[in-house]
Amino acid sequence: MANMSSSVCMETPHAHGHAHGHAHNYTPTPGRDFPLQMESCMNPVLDYSAQMERYRSFANFYAKSSAAAAAAGPFPQTAKIARIAAPIFPSARISAMPPWPCDNAMLWGRKPAAAVNVNGAHAHRATMPRAEPVNVHMPAKHLGQDSALPMPTADNFLSPLTAEQCRGLPVGGAECMNRLKVPPGGAGEAERGGATFGGMPPPLGGLSLPPGVIVMTTLHSGAGSSSGVTMSDSAFQIANAAADCQHSGSSCSGSPAALSANASASGSCSGASNSSGGGGGGGGNGGAAKRKRKRCGVCAPCRRLINCGVCSSCRNRKTGHQICKFRKCEELKKKPGSAVERASSVGAADTFRWFF
DNA sequence: TATCACGTTTAG
DNA sequence: CTAAACGTGATA
Ligand SMILES: [Zn+2]
Ligand SMILES: [Zn+2]
Image (cartoon, rainbow, N blue to C red):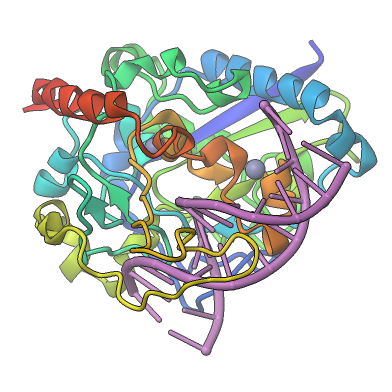
């Protein structure tokens, strides 16, 4: 038994506490809270073992592939909390309650946070603060299959559980919470214990995690002091999925708009800035700039809520301007053209009927 | 080929 | 305005 890991899952959309780690987070926008809804927290359950395994592989993966990064400096990047748009299922936004008890909710947050695109269109309804809108044409293959996705091993980390799994799980939300250790002050023993996020705000009554976030930690058995590499060290960034509700209510509650809203489709790009030098965003200089594609929001990487904090993109965010490698949308990785891509999307949509 | 760097787009 | 991240040329 070398390490133990504890995973915590929070699928609560609403939190009232002030969320903002005092520690060191990335707090671009001031005053953000996470509405908390305890009730929903009851079902969420995780298979700790499973998650642990995943995490381990993830860590492993990193140990090898990112040896350089890891080796050089464990986790150079300060822990920041990235507010990402939590991709949500349509159903979720409709009823505010996902079809399944806990599974994906963990990853997806339950509120329509981000504006999702139905099919190449963009919604203005985005609730998420800074997050990117997601295409919602819900393509995803089957939900439970993320492991099937092309993502590298590391990807497994955080893969959603199937509803079934969740139900079967022995642990309840409460338990979940227990497993979560949160430093009341911001950096208590708990943190050292390795179970906390630097960026988490003081718990309300004991818990403090942004809704829709799964936390996993590895405790090195002996570890106490330095615990070589722990999340608390800021190895991971937690994307705050809950941020959505900052407006308290209105949009967060069930704005279906997000879903439908996208019809507008392209239309926005206005200024044709022909970028001359280097990459230039629009890329296509001369002619009509290609529309920037948006993340699908349903692929494994998209569902990921945390920034690994150690990948080149994370470490290089300042200059690279790229999303965490592990969060890079599968769709976006593909070449723009790819007819298959489209097809699959459609098919995926169908797949979703399963939910309705 | 993979990665870096940068200008750009996009949304709040 | 700011922050996020896409697209792409330059580079390794
Ligand atoms: Zn990363
Ligand atoms: Zn995606």
